[in-house]
Image (cartoon, rainbow over all chains, first blue to last red; front, top):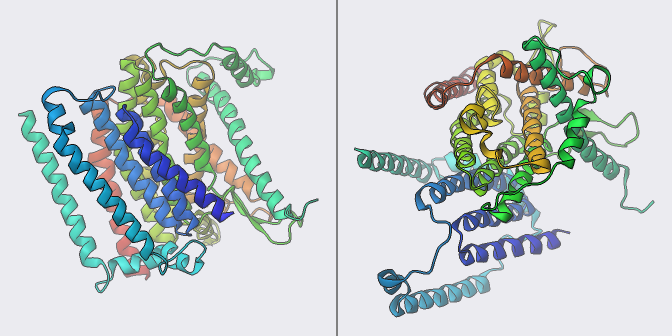
Length: 176
Length: 346
């Protein structure tokens, strides 16, 4: 049963991710990102990490809502037409295309390399792993322990605060 | 009978069906209640022609909605226009799945082991509700965008701004209760409120967290887009907001979603602050859920009463209230609760 769900959710996640870049309409792309994240959350549930799954939905759904607003309010383009003229040379010209192709080949090789090294990590059906990941208490203790991730966690929150204030300052300056 | 069809499985399937149909019926009951309460507030009779005392009015409404023509604006986005109401209704129903509504029961000896009275028993139930309610706004925003109508789009944008603003206070009022109970499971939170102080005051979190309860209810009204926070569909400004272009069953789905969301918020408030199925009366085992439904019903009445009593705020007042009053109050509530839990209790 678990295996069936695993393949189903993986298929949904991969197909949705591929469709994200295949869409001309940014609205559909944004929606497909949510579908992909939802499938990912389902995979977490299969791994018995329900807390991570729910966090995935809360945080990414909230973040994508903002993306949504960007699409609606800032882009204001119903469809993405293939660029022409100067932009075509800039973005779709021979040089950038070659670089993009080279990068995607490198990414593919890296993926295969990672997949061949896999095997000693936690796998599906390994339920002992689940207790450590799903327990909110265990996550909290590791996250806020001084020996654990406390410094990284606090540093990240300060970083995000700085980014937020920066965004507000930049947005304010324009309206003057 | 096949071997996999154990009594437990049948009980679970029955529970899912009961929750699903109870939610639909409660929406119908709420429509009737809304119209009758509105009539009472405005000193008129309300529906009284269809059935005894107008009791069959919701049924007549449903039949009317089914037989109406399904219209779609020419410039609307074909797929999203039809997906949006389905998303709304789906999120509304899914959120109630993890709400427990009664003590563990064996159905009077039918089962060997007692089961939880909830469609799904999840140990991070509260977070699941939070996640699903935050997904509900997509239905509204998509409806507003895909209709290709300026009023719809404005309604959808307002919905998203309002929900993002009030979700923070909403989540923080949860968090204080989670701190007190030490668990994310709604079932555990309810069981923590069992018992009485001085033999007659039920140990509800309402009495420990009065500010939290107020924040939860206020943010809950804003989250469900009900008056006095019904900006996404403010008639005087936006025709009907995000569902301006909808007719027939797709309109009915939005309507259904709104009422089911109200039921969910009231049920969660009952579980979090009013002791769920515990207190004020010591009911015999197997009948505790009656109290749960009574309290939820009272909260729903409060919702409707408020809609017909308070006028709508102005949009900037809504934002100011959310960010400058409700959010600081929620943060303060959380800090004080955390301090007390850390240094006084523990």
